[in-house]
Image (cartoon, rainbow, N blue to C red; front, top):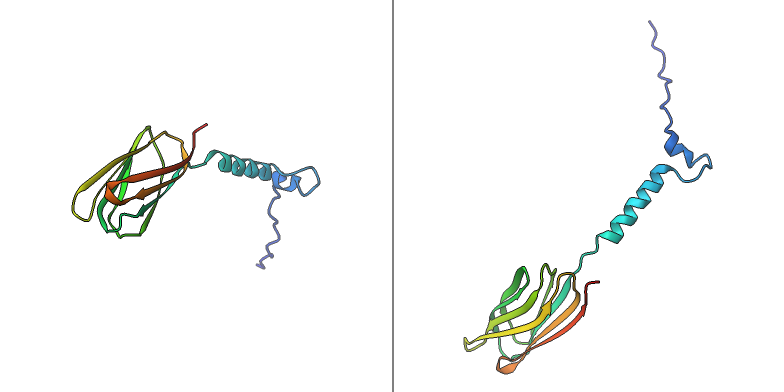
Length: 142
């Protein structure tokens, strides 16, 4: 018995072929474009880009920044050094900062009030004599 060569062709998909026949864009193409458009417009992540700069003239220890729903920090920040961190605000409340100066004294400061959905930049300057300057550039939630 001789085997016949395989001559069966795959069935064409009418949905995919519609665009090829000049009947407009295929349904699949339209669905993909809609999905991508929705994903790009609805998935915006609001965040605050923070930079903390140590201008105290000495190293500091145990830097901690508390904000609504979480906190971040560093074990040590050298004199003149900067620390960058990006966070997302979930909830409302004040930003609080604390660290230990070179002589071991605890420095505490309360920063700007934060609201869920805010975004932008926050610069925090650690200055001599336990002073802290907060420079927020926020866009409020709409």
